[in-house]
Image 1: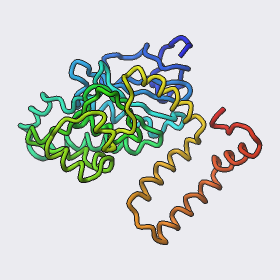
Image 2: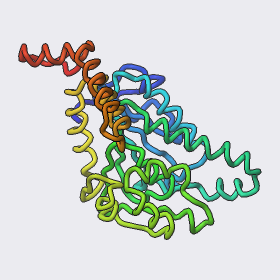
Image 3: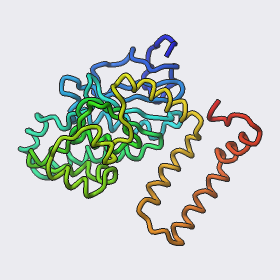
Image 4: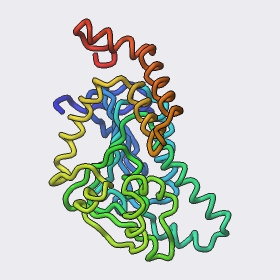
Length: 289
């Protein structure tokens, strides 16, 4: 991080990057801040620090739009998600929840579907997705954590699925949380609404790494960003899709045929041919240059 920061262009995801994350030339009042680098790293920051980055309609729309743009951003290698002001996300904005209590059930369904669709867009991103968690990650915030490929938390981070304490359930986030921590752990945490530590989250699989504090996030972003530069973008996307396809499947002839076809497509793809050729010729593949 030695180069001087420069101004963002209109769309920091879709336009050329500077060499380091940039923070100028943008609307700092936006509910989501977007920083991008020339090496293909995007950092999305939930930007409602006064509300501990609690979910509201504007934040959900902004995240959904960012994920939709990233879906087609082939030059992006890794996407990091964090919160501003020392908090990841305190869950749902209580003002928003209070308003929804007066809505009809159909209106509530449409509102909840926007959150569900946003989480699905995050889940379906072709790039490696990483949650950087400090402070509280409650409710929908913990759902974001579960929907990412990798989650790293500080030792002081705290988690909770406290919806039952409000007479609600963590319905929209449940597919990602149950996948991450398993049904038995999910039942206990969903039913009790109890808060738990980063150490517990690591033990149960909600996060995969715990660091001392947020000062460790910068080096981690740099290391992962450098590692992803060596990986073919299309192969990364296909590898993620492969996991989704084979998870919990019976290992039968149908699955064997699927996996054989999957590697055959990769071997004959442009990336596959280039990767093997680069290895044999002892040079870097095109995507790593």
